[in-house]
Image (cartoon, helix red, strand yellow):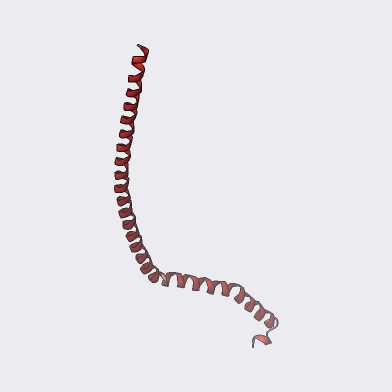
Length: 106
């Protein structure tokens, strides 16, 4: 029937080309949006699992930092004691050296 109309085959080809040029992108966009919005339920479960894992790792890092802080405090105390000992040794050495020099200068 369309083929009996003058210019019918040309109109048929124009509609087919228009359907391909407009219809295919519209269908692809609709599929993309459908998958994106329907697939969110799976993502929320995965996100919840990842948040739980992050909390576990943060707790582990905090525990490691606390343990490292305790070790650093002990090392600081040791280094301060060592510095005090070195200062006292220097004073003794200086007093011995100055004690020897005083009689020589008098």
